[in-house]
Image 1 (cartoon, one colour):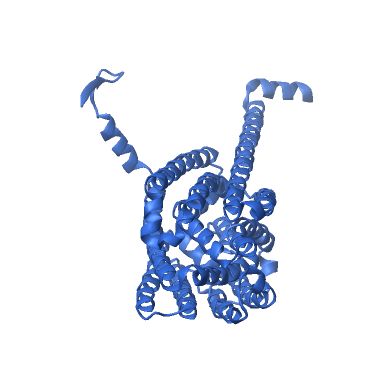
Image 2 (cartoon, rainbow, N blue to C red):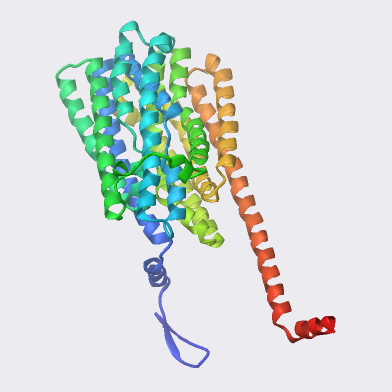
Length: 487
């Protein structure tokens, strides 16, 4: 600690650098609360991810490479159909609720949440039915036998019971990030504990599919209960107790925003579900199981990007509504830097312990996962970089641009996958993910920073016009000129 003199001659104490940084951290109202929330979310998701990998390890030992691959294809069929149809209503809800919070009544907010819940329920039911039909018509092409269609019907129950967009929006806007972080641990613990029992009981494929279905239903049930509690604590009536008539007329633009964001999300996430089915089609169910493991393990790192969307998107929407451009820019830059560090840590860890860890957890039959995992981590690094830009663009009310980027990147993904997969096998899907991530990161960054630059220029011009108008109206010269003109 040292002494410095102020301009008035007073002596003040200058704190060490570390102490000044700590004071700045404690005084922060923008960065610190968001970082703390993300730490909670990352720790909860990391714990849940570890439990999931442990359960997958038990499943691979119980089922073997072939049957584990069949289970992966069953789960992928269900998830593909869910992504195709499901309305992720939390995105439009966050956008519209943020705009309504200051001047909207609680009854109006309740009807807004009811609109999201209505879309969630309808899409979940349709997705479950489509999954069963797809398995019946095309299951054999992805490596499923005739007796495996019933397994897809079992897992379809989890899809029907998984409408969570409204609850997700309520928890995010209510700042319940600890709840979002740790609620999934309950279903993960249930899945792991039951997997141990099934392994010792020498249970087969059907038992493990039922277990995965039950765990997802439990997770969705807890999630929705907590979402309704968050609404009640916010003083908003239950969406189940308000009229669902005329919602589209009362909230014009909601459905259009929902469709746009959901299509872009569908395109973005389909590449993480359809790819497994493509591997199953070209290389068989066994290869699909290996590929699925590479993506599932890499998802540890990708979860950070999802957490960015969870924590930051509501704040970015509010910041943009307050016209605070500099705060938005600063937040996006800080997050992109932090995510680059996270991605680098995972890549270095994979290089150091990847191969022995795969043998330890999954056995010698799964060592071919390593090159796919290593490639996938580079794709995840690019996806992480794009996450803050995507949230910023949605906050700026540019869902159409986000949709266009998702469309271009998805076309690129499937083009590369289809061209390379017949000759390269499963790893071609990982190469396609790298191309998808690069295209997404590049175009979203271009859209965000150009959009902010244009907005700064517009704000500057508007300010200049206002200042000029005040000068003309308030200056004596302006008054004399006016009087001379009248004379």
